[in-house]
Image (cartoon, rainbow, N blue to C red; front, side, top):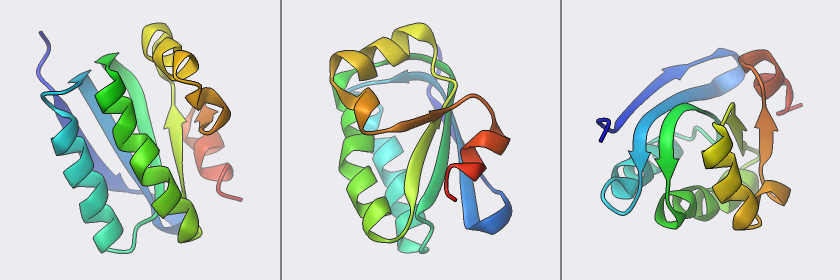
Length: 115
């Protein structure tokens, strides 16, 4: 199983870029949740999450984003998901989350999605 990793970096306009790799599931979702909550505590509510290196996401992993998007939007932010693999996108589709989240193909489009 690939090791779960999260990296964050600040982009322009206060956008935080988060890359996630490995498996986001019942064993790792708390780490993802902590990362997002730490960003929220620093008033960073504009998040772009690169899912291109995420091999697997469970409903618990997707739940982190469900729990966070409301807080982001209430604070004039959002969570933009970037380049999910087909199997990760399928989980979002099956859970009905593709109607809630904005997906982007690259950083430029993701940042533009904030308006």
